[in-house]
Image (cartoon, rainbow, N blue to C red):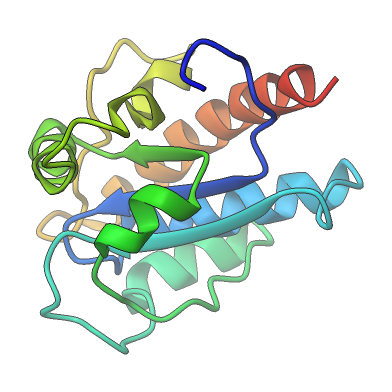
Length: 164
């Protein structure tokens, strides 16, 4: 039922390799949901558009930056699947390339209403994409976490309103 507002209970964060941005978003959102007492109502996961890092932990630099803020990034990299389009209520992509990849997986255009840029929820930064910190210096990981914290706060509010 496309026209109906349904509660958001399952969120998938998507980046390219699933070792920097999306596992960090997953970890930040899980921590915020737990702090709000919603950890049993809200399931978060992350995936990548490529399978190059399948089974690997998040990038050590991202894990270190996240740990400094009290976040644990415990997921392992995996590639997004067509089943994810069905399972998740909201699929948030970190950049336009990721969004195009996910939309292309939706061959029959059934799930486009679920696929959104993560930056739709970011208010404190004027950005259309969460930058990939992989090839940059350490400050890039902190900037990504700043954006993720801002966006996840708005996202948590959005999910709470949807669930009412």
